[in-house]
Image (cartoon, rainbow, N blue to C red):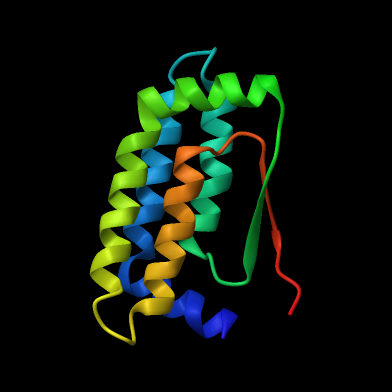
Amino acid sequence: MGCLGNVIWFLCGGVISGLSWLLTGCLWCITIIGIPVGMQCFKFAALSFFPFGKEITYGGGAGSLLLNIIWLLVSGLPLAIESALLGCLLCITIIGIPFGLQHFKIAKLALMPFGSVVHDSIV
C-alpha cells in the first residue's frame, strides 16, 4: 500500500502540502537565524510529498519546546489548519479516509515539528 498510496497521494493533493512546507522553509531561510528552522521544513516537505510508510515519534527537551512555541506563533498554525481542513475534506468519502489520516498526521507535525523524528514504519 505504501508505494501505491504515495503515488496517488502525490498526484491528488500531496503536492499542495509539500509545496506549503517548501515555501515556509524558503521564507525561514531568508534570515541566518532561521536557517535551521528552514532546513527542518525541507525535511518535513519530503514527508509531506510521500507520507505513506513513515512514522513520526515526538520527543525533545526544553529547547524543542521553546522552538515549537515560536514556530507555532509564526508558521505552524497556517500549516496545521491547511492540513486539518484537507484531512476533513478527504475523510468525507470512504476512499479518502487513508489520505485524510495522513493529512492529520502532517497537521500534528505542523503544530510541533521540533524534537520529532521521522522514520520508516515496520510492517
